Amino acid sequence: MQHTEQIIIGVDPHKLSATIEVVDHHEKLLGSGRFTTDRAGYAAMRKYVAGWPDRVWAVEGSNGAGRPLAQRLLEDGERVVDVPAKLAARVRLFDTGHNRKTDARDAHSIAVVAVRTTTLRVLQLDGELEALRMLTDRREALTRRRVQTVDRLQALLAELLPGQAKKDITTGQAKVMLASVRPRDIAGKTRRRIAAEELAELVAVEAKIKKATAELKAIVLARGSHLMDLPGVGPVVAARVLADVGDVTRFADRNRFASWTGTAPLDASSGEQNRHRLSRAGNRRMNHMIHIAAISQIRLDTDGRA
Image 1: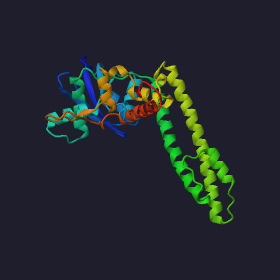
Image 2: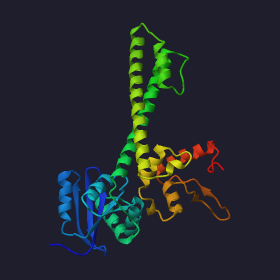
Image 3: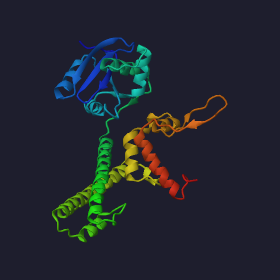
Image 4: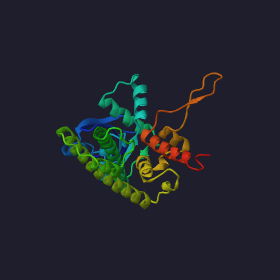
């Protein structure tokens, strides 16, 4: 039997499972269930809601834990909106009087938010943007790997060449340093061999970072973005901004955007005292990208520095 009125499917997503609650526009419970996120579980979930053709999926955290499921739904032609975790938590607190979480209660809160809120972000399938996200995450992982490799290499070189350690070593400098030492004992030979292996890994990682940066730059330019025209904004910062922001029109104004990035100061006034404090909330990755751009602008003669 098919129902013609529009219904909302609240989804509490996890890596291995998804709990859903189906409600109408009066918040009346129509159905619920818990499904695995493998192929069989996903097919069973789609089959369960097939009787409601006019449906909207409300997925919590579609930029985080909910992204894989949201992307699958979009690829299958479903309508999906993003429900911020803070809104769902607020509804859970108001409806129950406490903030204790269960998957079923979370799915209910998410569905209620979608019913009551008309300004939720409607997700769009954008393969290019998804590729940008993956490449940005990949480059960040490579950067962390590079730092770890450099640390190990520097520790080995400090033992092979005491007193000649460099704080910011390049692969060329490391090659010269390694070529200058020829230990004769087994410990020294082992240390030099491991250092050579770490150096080879560093060279390989840096080549991958360079390739990933070039790919990011090409996609950013292909999307017609002018972010890189700003001082301090290179391909990596621009790519992360585009990947995390998605559709910038989801922010009503610049103040909402500043709040989301954690760059808007928080009012901490009390009585006669009028003061503000630094926000530790918001998207910390975006906050870090803005920080990188700001530091670059402070160093250079820019409008930002002024």
